[in-house]
Image (cartoon, rainbow, N blue to C red; front, side, top):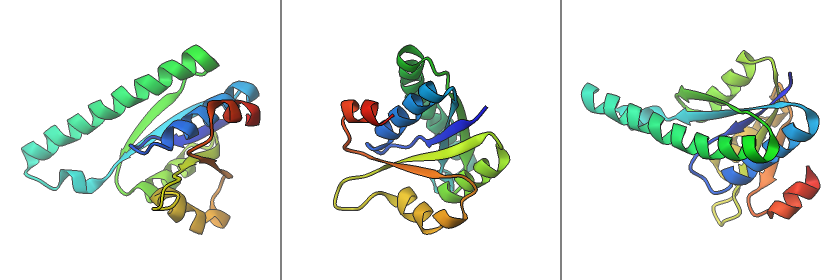
Length: 151
């Protein structure tokens, strides 16, 4: 089965990327995988403290995932998978796409503020010609109605 890969992070634009992926998956019979990457610099502390912080990060990710997953199940009839990795975001995203042959599209949300579209969009678009799958960039300020019309 073809799957949409969406990156779960703390950005506001992540919400529209989730919505887009779930709606497209529902309309095309595809699946959704939600990937969250925990940066390694969060755990550069004493071993015990680092382990506690790692577990707290995982709990926070699971809580966010459950909110998105409930909406996807209830509204779009899509049951997403959650994958958590540790490392630098871009290499981990690329490696996951390489590891899971069912990934058909990478979906990212683009920020709309003065800081630009966001670090993931900026970094991944620089190498987009070499990506093994197409990338869809969803504007962070699209309304729900516009997303429904597009998908």
